[in-house]
Length: 385
Image (cartoon, rainbow, N blue to C red; front, top):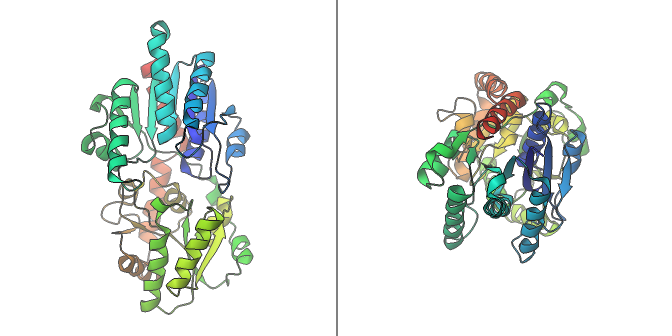
């Protein structure tokens, strides 16, 4: 086996699509692949069929779950045994938990079998050094990452300049020589067949209504409460008939809390669409994309909006700055502030967005193709082996 790739779970989101496109593309370059993944939560949409449709050889590890628990000991053993069985040339881990368990298992196996060491690569899709946990937990996870970067990582992949600067230079994770910047790759073909009516009809949105939407899993780090607050602020400065849509899923309890928060602010214009699997329908329905995250690597929703020629308003965090541009070249950025976001909505509605949209469309095609991702990772693997 050439490559064993590990990701925590194949839920709807950028990392799961990334590993599927990457694995499929590298298989065409004759790298034999096996993708190990954990189980999704009951409130998450499963994206494993997406990988299987791309002919990726997937193996589910039932003991690998989202939450930290004693079950992780079993997950570590299961991963170790699978690595022992397949003896890959390259072990490539993605996302924090899979990165910890996978690299730890790879380190132990390399110590036990020094004559047959695998090369270990880890990709940061985001990081847990701020915005997720308490200060003490963030320090603990940072120290774990520094240990793994030093002793269990032959290469560290970051997906944006801003993220690389944070992880390599600010947090000092790993020797600079180990760091490689390889941007995400996305399939933009969907943008050629956008469905302008299906989702609007399903959500009872009038054809003549402008639609702002936030797309992605509902989690605290995505800060959907800020989106709701920004809609409340927008209604104070604009009385147009605008529709606001939240596309993404979570537990029934968390969804109820979000709806209650919307009601508490007197916001009745937000539509909760739940999970929508087809990007053709999502971006066909949207006139503007919003992102309110506290921390990001490279959000696929913004890249997909660029491909679909949809103007973007986002909080200025992480890798968003790299893809949007610090001078608002390809979208509009602001701080984590509801009034500022509301002002951006007003600007998008009243200004000519064509120049930014054209720049964004060209940017995503030139810098985020799947071929570019696969070729760079192919070069990295060859340099290690």
